[in-house]
Length: 206
Image (cartoon, rainbow, N blue to C red):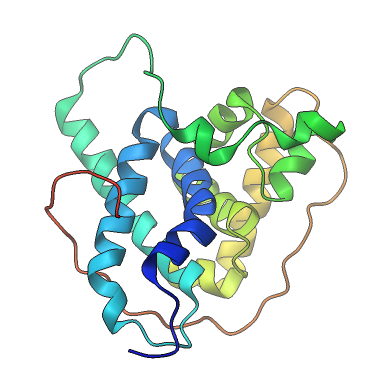
């Protein structure tokens, strides 16, 4: 299909954003698996994606479903892990940009950055709807209409969940800023085709 970039360029352009979302929703231990499964499914569905689709919203929708799958699988296993292993997350996400320029960690989260492991853990501990709304709106930059389309429910409910999540984050994370979160202007949600769930083995798309 003409008019679309190669899939490798999609991974390069959106991979770090999807990883931040997966880490915020799932935590560092399961984020890499969800990231890989997201792009495996996206690779299969990409040929049928309309050229004018919102690729980032489409990828976040797939990541949302994969996060649910990972959470359900982890609940079935229920095997305690003493320590999270090293992962390629750090090389994808890069070093802490908030620490580099002295920005407040909560402000960094609002600007789309997971400042450090403690902040990532704080986001992960939010109630499910709140952490999803925070991740999809503040980390992925999706408008509330798109967040509502992913989560189900109204735009106002998505907005409220994100606001509640930011408020709880400021109370639970030391040094959180007191200023109002940055708002991403709402627009009509983009329609993206559903990705067919894959049972392929985990691995990064080439």
